[in-house]
Image 1 (spheres, helix red, strand yellow):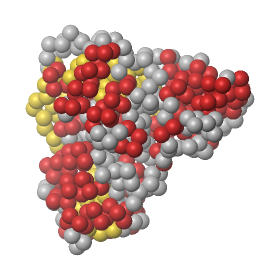
Image 2 (cartoon, rainbow, N blue to C red; image 1 turned 180 degrees about the vertical axis):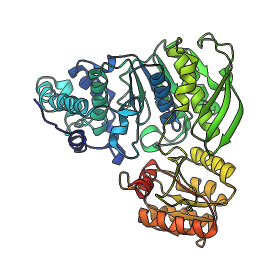
Image 3 (spheres, rainbow, N blue to C red; image 1 turned 120 degrees about the vertical axis):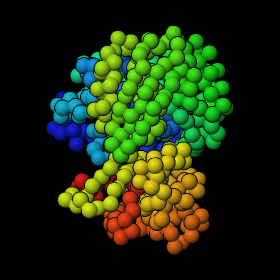
Length: 465
């Protein structure tokens, strides 16, 4: 039966389900529920080989880089990532392009049949399914937005007969709805304290959750970690008999040159039986920042493990064509060549904010205007301590409405460190952008907008409509 005529209708229907990104109870995280849903859909998660990416920061960049290189090598790549910046379809793509409207709609029809027909029939006949999907049971919950969005992605990947899936976790790893995959290789980027109400309040607890994506016998490509986290990953890979490719011991980055146009660097790999030998690679990516060179190196390592016959020209060319919105992206007001440089970045953890500011100061000088907004579950005080010394003026605002935020409390955190004269609270985001640009123009200063991908999306609306 046909239910949907437009992809917008599909996503509007999905938005009627509980959205994990807006707040959810811990009982909603049950990977068993996702296994039931994929079985009802005849296992679309197994339609193609996959690469699975988790981490606190950089996982979206690694996902985009893998997709870009594979696409340049003529693979049909189904790409799943979050959050979106401008359009929710950014989460479910064929390479860096949207699927056709027909694919979203036909797969949406199939998904609705599963939710409204097959699942209720199963719940009526199986006590175990009833326990998982009944909101009235102790551990039950109706299908969540995130579970259904993930299943929609798998259905789209199967419908288009993709060659490979590149899949980013939504949150954590062990209980994430994407963790029904059995990937060729897993990637875990740097981890930090995040989502502590769901993942745990220590780095070790969060590392345990992220390590849940490691599969028996399948390699793990691991970014540099603190000692306590590294021990968790070393133990887990030993238990799973999974080769560990630890970035600091495996790869060498050199000749890093960061400009406003991007990052040039040279990459080589040490002798490692898991990574096919390669020549010294001279590479360029159109995103400024040393951290992006590190992300690219993780992506290349995973790519060479999963697809050892990939041509090195595809690696170079794919990275040059890379498109990652809101990763140190420079915006310009329409028809206003005199406007100050305005950079947006989705940095939303202390470590990622520090790296973003380091790149900003390197390129634009040790002063500027900061437009900042973060979600309520972020450590605003830690980020204030990092940001305040580097900016002449800081505007605190609301990072959109997609996630709960408390701009008043964020303002208090920043004002306590830098003083009220330096910090301004402008809750309306569009007005905050206006004021930041006016101040920057008057003082001839650049602007950085960061703290949340959702804030970046709101700023983009100002510039792009």
